[in-house]
Image (cartoon, rainbow, N blue to C red; front, side):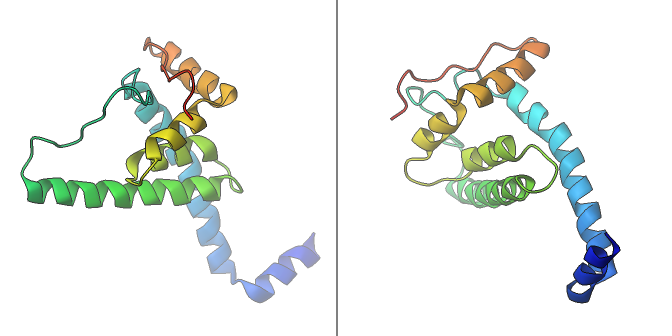
Length: 144
């Protein structure tokens, strides 16, 4: 095991390894808190492609533009962090789902419906929602 550590330290400094460990731990703890908080507070029909999802429609155009930029930036961070959590400790798939739901791109609703429509993902989310007395998420029968 010592040879592995010495080999890694040839390419990456000890300070960088400590920083990556701390960052990984922060992502892990943050995901354990943030992901259930977000998923429990979503409306039950949030991922249903049949229900329109207007966002900031009645706000000033400049405020709406700033809101969309900030929302997409945060969504990209969640998506990247979720991707990292596939290899590091954390709830990678759920974090990526939140990131995708915050991004704006064509066909996003169908991608969300496919992700959330996976039986394992849906049962985990609905289990969280049930613990907090929230109704289960509803999705369209065929999100294709």
